[in-house]
Length: 329
Image 1 (cartoon, one colour):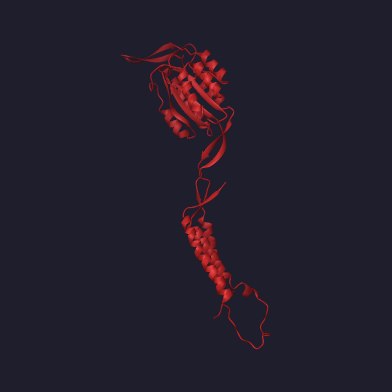
Image 2: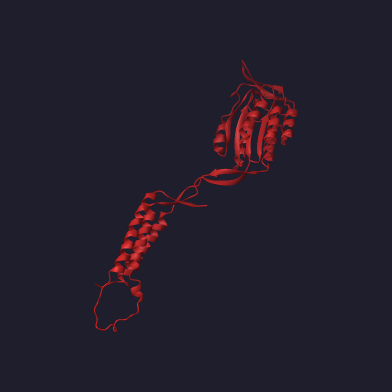
């Protein structure tokens, strides 16, 4: 709903001037009248002509024009600034494994970069959702809290790299940190998308314990296991530079399935770039809930109509005074 505000509202005090002048004019013509002595009044018409009725119109038009000019100087603006609106959306936290094993090359260019690229495309499509980012390896931390400013989130996403935290795979810690970001959310649909390529081997919180906490807060967890089945080329630093060796892919699919089942989510396995993209497409069809979003709307100046009406009234008053209502001294 549009609201009108005034930048220079102090100029409204000037409206006293046309009010005072109008009052003075009315009092003047009420108490001051000319007397003409005639022996016979039959020659004077008792009917009031239209011209006589309109003799005060130019003054009234000028008074109204003055008031409109004062309103224009006060700079009226139409605004819906910081309007609370309701939109369709959900609250989503992306929990991403950045351990050293995410550098394996079974996805192109590697697991981590492939996961980042697909996740960023996913974020761009969820325009009405609040999205946050949690990263974990041997420990976990929040890279970006829930936000609708997806440009900021994507820029932070680009800075994510392996080695930002101690190596390891703390799935339970990553899940617990994500829950902490969602537990106070008022959205009906609260979702965690947890992506990992390994087995929980560090952290103080067991994955299933974290899943039980998520269930209590009504948070659905969608788990993604990243990595081909069998062996994957992994980079090793040698005296001759980086060499690639095939390493067995070990993903605790049973735990990831249990987390998804316990929280009414779903488990996915991404063995290549295409399957990873398809997984995010499936998640993109999640049911949306209603959340409140604060939106900013630009103000627009509205002084011009008041100015034009004032000029039009002044012009009309001038034309009447020199034509139809012209007075001869």
